[in-house]
Length: 145
Length: 293
Image (cartoon, rainbow over the protein chains, first blue to last red):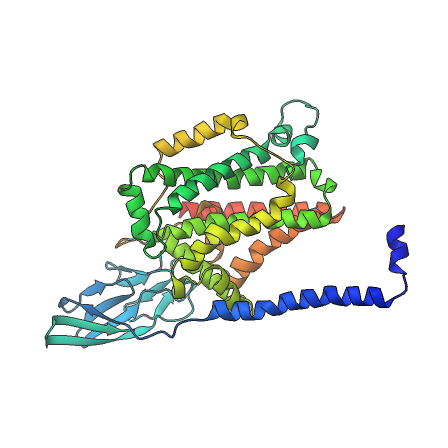
């Protein structure tokens, strides 16, 4: 009953100022979220990474790295990302079937990184590979991503 | 919710499941498990290094004296805390004790459930084994699928790809605990639960931790199937068929909204309970399918 009566109180200067102060505090709190999320969202600019594979893989073979799989074909080497384009799980190479399989939701990709089946919608990114034949660091492959 | 400890002790009408659920002091069991989880968590945190998470957990497990015991103790007590909290919630709903709470307080208390779930989940992620690593990137990508809010939320909660385990660790250690504390503060300051009253549970948890190591699955060549944490199996299955935003955000949110509506008056309460029952059945079926894969 008392609450109902309070609702119909005339708008005095005191009530107006008190209400405004309360709204101002809420607005200030919400405004502070902007610098907070801008601060959180800052990312150091990413640099290209180059990983060296220190061995010569035979033609038809493959090499599994943390971030990519390196394949060697008749036409030369190529590398595809191991990050599933569905939700980012790390793919593994199923040698018997010649496919990259996601262990989380079972999306499948072929050696070229083209999506075959599963919930993933996009193909896998391919990375640049350079073959090092007689470099000062020995033989191998340089994969840049 | 712990109000039920006193208020919902209904007169016993034969020992059926309903009375058993209502009369058991889940709130106390949950709180004692939380105490143990926090204590063992502090011990584990003294050795854990977020910069090299998997190496750190492996060292803790294999090299540090009693490391396996403390990690197991943290793991099992946290699982029990979550399970007992859910039982406590079920008991409150069954006893209709939620009707004694103001709706605002009910909202706050329900807010503690996602916080608890995230605390448990970030614990899985922090061990950075095959399951943890996969769970982390999945959570990050699901969060990013939320329109507009996805990127800031991910920056706040995970950002694993850009920052590694740094933010997950900060949230596991402080942020989520703080959210949980804010949600439950008013509720818990009225109740005191001593270790002594639940010594059997304490002995059982410590005994279990001594005998059974907490799970850990190293990433290895030829790992073609990863099963997520038991409470996310249904979600993992659903993500095979539905877009991440619908499966990972909307579907779980519906049950939280239904839980919030339980705090309203009938018929909203009844409809919410029916919805939750249906949701739980669907989730259970999905979890069973995922477990059988």
